[in-house]
Length: 235
Image 1 (tube, rainbow, N blue to C red):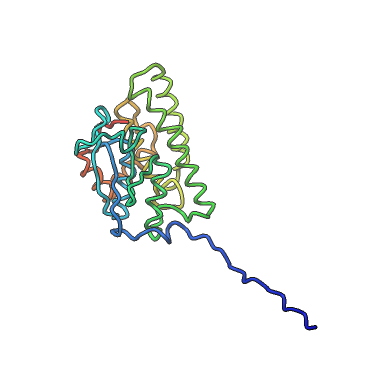
Image 2 (cartoon, one colour):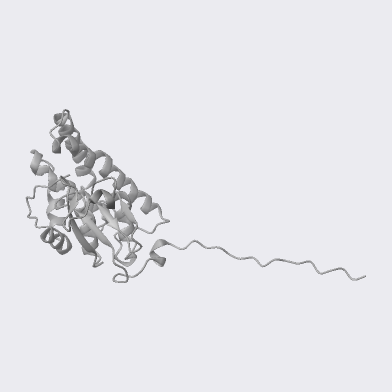
């Protein structure tokens, strides 16, 4: 009796598809950024302008937690703060460390973030983590005039000194080009003057601030938010 042929199942190769490949092209969707003028949401606004994504924008009053169209902001983002990015499927994304790389991946050709599977991407996340935890959050006691404000100011100045050293001989935080980390750091620098933290004491950072400020996308985002060079921001 002839032996039955052995059945060999077909091998299906599975490949992960980077977000940048499956994301819609600019203009194909209608994402909305909820922002407060001068707040940390300005970083996402700058990135969106750099990439010409054509986002919709809606201003949020963080005191009343109402949007400019009268919506209860807590119903949009229960966390109650910006940035909040409403996606085309009506879900929301929060936190700069998530929003900024997400926006960058929509235009990978512009290089505002390294490829997702690269070590450079890890370094970008390292910078974003440092900025959000060591700088951004340190401004809290200053904005709220709470106990520990003096210590917070000292901490910020120490962190700025560290970054100042990293910028020696380079124009940007990494890769020799503007990335989303630069957009985030720039917003932190705009807050310094409000609390008597003089960038003139940090030669590299002072020049860096002016370099980022001169970018057309930065000027566009700030203008759209009604800001000026020496702006006063909300946290």
